[in-house]
Length: 184
Image (cartoon, rainbow, N blue to C red; front, side, top):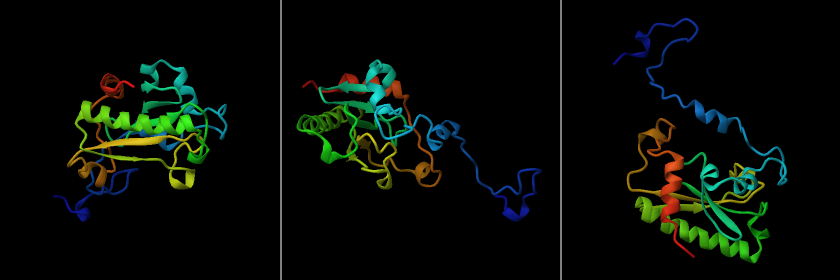
């Protein structure tokens, strides 16, 4: 192993630091907030308002209900990372009406069932971030995350490398989960 003191300065790049890098330039769109709403209203470019207007395959919609829909996260923590989203543009859980609250709960249960069946998920992180200070990437439109977990799924890549490794394309994951989605 080369010691840092043994490395020579490279023109324009400084002194190498012995780290290998895995470049993920596609993440820059997320970091820069591309396609993020320009405001808090439904007409301000909210992706959760636009997705239901798309074909399921193009919008990565797994299932549609009367008040909510389930969609794959475009920037997933793990394969199969779903979100349950009300059609209505609403920011706060306390502002959901009865059918939206019931639909959110029912679709979360169905998401768990579909993920267990399709991927053998052994556990889940389920929840929502309400407000930007709580970590909501799109705070103006409530959405509940359903993140499947498996024993040993945390390895050196996210812990040390700050990189997620996803073994399947989003469209393939969408097709698999749509097929496993339980009927009402």
